[in-house]
View 1 (cartoon, chains in turn blue, cyan):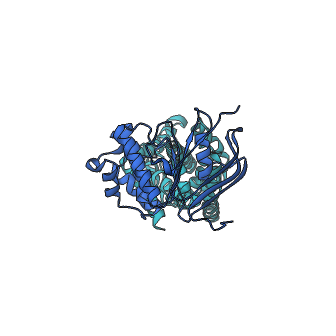
View 2 (tube, helix red, strand yellow):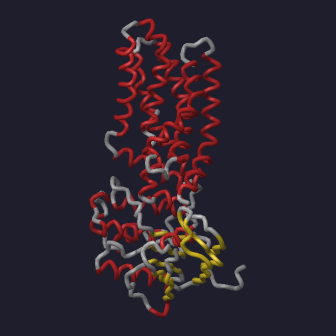
View 3 (spheres, rainbow over the protein chains, first blue to last red):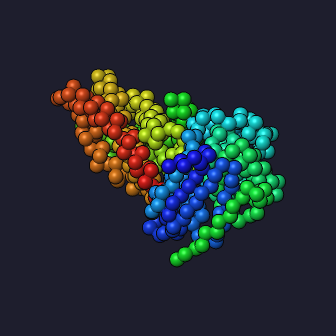
Length: 203
Length: 217
């Protein structure tokens, strides 16, 4: 099925997905190759998050097939940050490095990269919403996975944070990764590597 | 294996930071046992006779109390979803959490059981038998509990439903548990209790993992 396509890539054929028995997206044929970012747009409730969860394999598709050609798995950044308030910033990140495999950069370096380098030993419960989001972003850096599924990656982030997300995605694409991002904000990525898809809310 | 140990350490560290969680369960266990003499009257003979049952009921209730902590916080903050995307198989995740649940909600009860023995007028032999039966039987309660907690993880009021689901499953554990303390066939009751624990601990991670995977759909 690879048809000589360069890895990694993500392809869907006639994909239909939905939540709670309600179909949201139907007949979706996607092809995202290495170094490409697909930006999903669409109104609230159109099914962007559901599509990402389905692509991640967390929700079963209603129809169609998903083919993700990579050995290392996918990273999902959902609206839930999976940050434990009672553990320190570094402990939170080191946990994911340990569970997912420390194949990326060092946790301390990752925290520096997302701007949390000065508060690595603070309990994560004291972080602001934006800082918590940055900690969640750092999780993508400590384990190298070529496929990133990002749900509102810039949520709660300041202007500098928007630039950070754009830079991180840019570096990820340059390193041969691919990304699918659902967002309402202009990400500020190099237009040459970005495809856009608008998901229509059909009821 | 190292991912499994990382998860185990992560869970234990959170319990350590949690403050009074463990102490609450132990106090609940002791208090449940301690109020029985007030309810049935201070008849030493009667108390000594029903003591095994009281200890097991107290342990059962205390372990139910800890169930809601097992998967719900991780489900709500998205940790469980990310663990499904990690390389770690879901049954291993459940096994780690089950082990921590036992260490947090059962082992401290074992340590506190001498206190309950004094309150319930148990003698030394009976205390020894009680501790042995708790040691052998509580893994089964932890196993059934994790299945119950996993099945109800997607429900908003699941914290209340899980105990109702778990109670019927736990009946054999209570029967053989209480039977293995100073009963006529205490020896065979302990063996059956051990069989229950081994079987349920072996199967529960797979059943619970299946329930968690379908909770997101």
